[in-house]
Length: 234
Image (cartoon, rainbow, N blue to C red; front, side, top):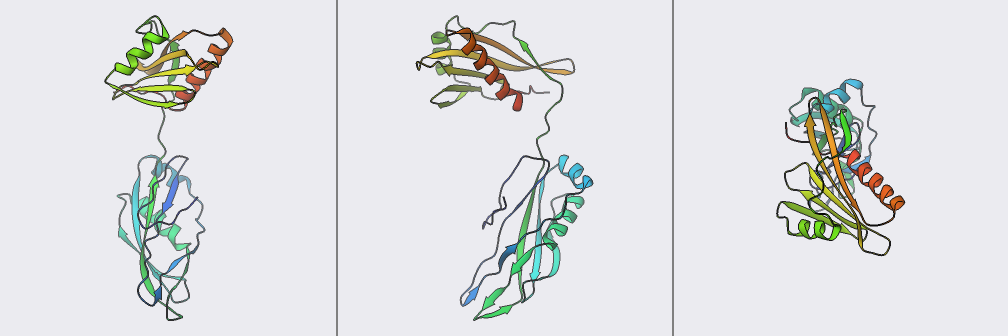
């Protein structure tokens, strides 16, 4: 989805994303120029390779004719990548505008259009999962949760189904899940560790409910981390 805002928009994910921010303002007795429609051109393979190696914002100055057509394009501010700047110019060239109107008459005007390129986060392909030989810090879930609540280097996110404790500046996470009765019934600690050329997600668990339920919770927890693995510092 493309949003029009008065400040730079933010976006991310996917192969390559473009966000567009509307910096068009009205003055007295005039209606500001505005986007009518946007028809981005196809993204070339070279542009994808360029985006994968970095991100940036290209700001394009657009001169809009009185009929709304794009009269002239110039690069106001570079993203730092010539390829991305050229891509931004090509994209904005395809825009269609409603012209600035003063007292019912279309007039030529100039606007700035930021185009934000966000490269996708590159995930390592050599991530493996394995059981951690080191057990949890405590032998019961209640003791483990009490420890996590007091642990200073931890940030917690909670909902009705449980809690997730993130190690601050550490490739470490604890996932606590509530059993159907509402009591903490499962906890898994997962830590990222580099071993040779591989990055391991080492996990250790404690369960105080049925084996089938605990297996499902472990699968769910590992799937969550699989989508965003814990990466140790180089």
